[in-house]
Image 1 (spheres, rainbow, N blue to C red):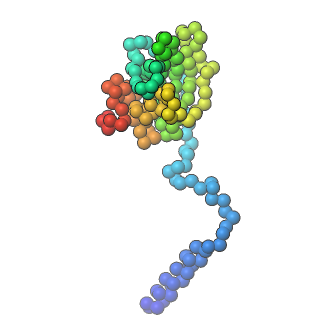
Image 2 (image 1 turned 135 degrees about the horizontal axis):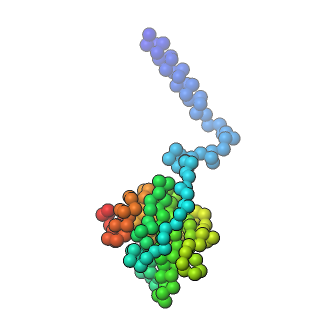
Image 3 (image 1 turned 90 degrees about the vertical axis):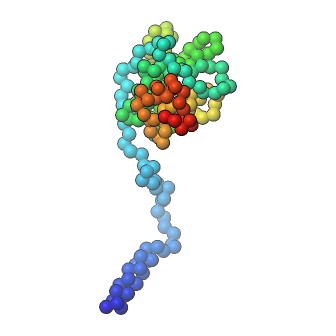
Length: 183
């Protein structure tokens, strides 16, 4: 009986080893992706309506770099966290001379990307959707990389939004950044 079991085990081991040959194959392994790295069928939420233009009392400043003369603010009333994992917000960038850029943007936490939905029009009284762009990789390290600061300090953690819009706004208001470890 033991001999039959031993013979069966040897046969199974031999069959297993036969599948592990060292002969090269022509199979293309470049298409291999790990299960957790596979991209799902992500669908972006439609952005049909834009928020009202920001009011000075709703702006929350945040730091980007000690070396930039520009001031950066988020409109607390415009910030949303979509079911698609995108944090959408209005950003106001102000120069020392008082010139302002106002954009409605989104940051996608799972891919480290951002996009522009609209900017302030030439008359400074409404949104201009013609400036919209597609998803782009967030740039690190440049002087005015405010999207990188928002992603890393307030919006995203472990490729997910850090919480609800209210939580993110409170963190910006209280200047609680991710590196503080307090949220």
